[in-house]
Length: 457
Image (cartoon, rainbow, N blue to C red; front, top):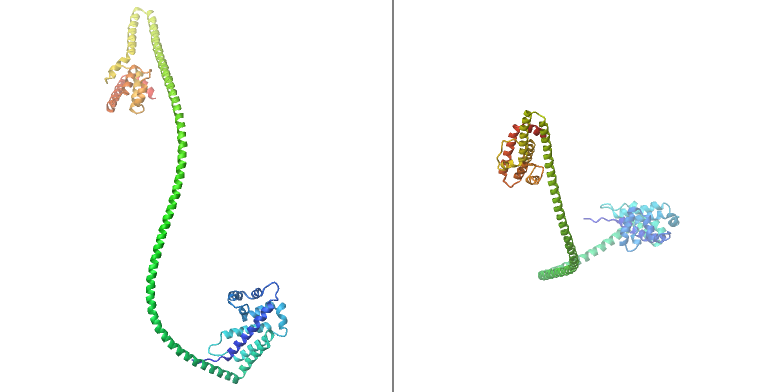
């Protein structure tokens, strides 16, 4: 592959380096004149956002502030502080900002040259002229003279050819030296390779031994860690057990105190309960005595009312009989005889009513007579049977009803039989039979039927 000669690019690159060497200290000296800002602050505030970010990233890596200043920064810095700082220095230079931008463009072309050819000679001469003029303002005369020599070399082909020959001879000499060094290096590499093979074998053995040692060390470390963990868990468990024991002891102490207080309280409550029981027993005895006395009074009152009712009934009957007998005395003998017959029937009726309770001897043996019943008694008895069959009256209610002194003798015996302890089948048969008998009687008695209808209505 042929080597492309780039004399224009080389000369322009050297000129740009001279330009940077002159412009960087020039900027830092003059930026110190900016009031209220340091040199770094003045520099950063003059750059666009993207260049400020790059400067902040590159500045910590640079050796100093001047080495962090790039060619593209120069135009922005001088433009920002032109009137106060830089204008007096460029009084005799026209088109300063265009020339500064031209140098930045030249820097980009040097960094990115055309493929397989050198930069244009005329354009390169224009870039060198601009750099020489700017260095004449910010640099020294020696730096400006160096740029002028670069321009002269590009214009004189003989000088350029002579320099190219010198460079070629130097490169050839460097090539020969490099070949000798490579041969020496190759021999050295062969020796090193042999030594490396031997060393590699030793290293493999050492690596195997090291792995065994590492495994042993790792096993020992794991064992130590395991034992340490077990000891730590045991220590933690022991601490937890001690804390739990302390809490339990505290709880037991508090519980014993509470039990003592509760025992004292229970003793007081027990004594108070005994006293209350004594009072309750005394009150219950008093209540029982009062109840018994009240029951005796009620019973006596019931007996008195019963006797009074019987006496009133007898008196009424007697008065009625006496009235009828007094009326019969005014009748004729025939009427007297007839009245006597009626009196005998009335006495028989009275005798029948007084002895109605005796008929229950037959009733209690489940024998049902066809003798006439008192319609009111039969109606009440039939009502009781209906209540019993419908379940509205149980045996407890019947036992309570048996003590009612308003019942006739037949009903008293019926109620007592109904509340007795006979079994269910016998009781149902007994009640059903009595119910049929009463209904049969009711069919034969118009008076009973009328009273029954009135009761039902």
